[in-house]
Image (tube, rainbow, N blue to C red):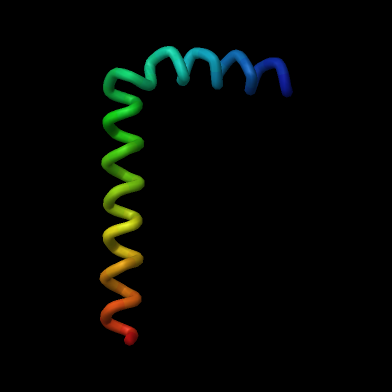
Length: 43
């Protein structure tokens, strides 16, 4: 199981500079933006 995860992680890190990295950055940015909006609305 651990070897399977490590191989998947290596494949993912290889594709990171392409669509994977862009998608991950976009999702993390949207998540941070949503959290900031929620905290501003609550405060």
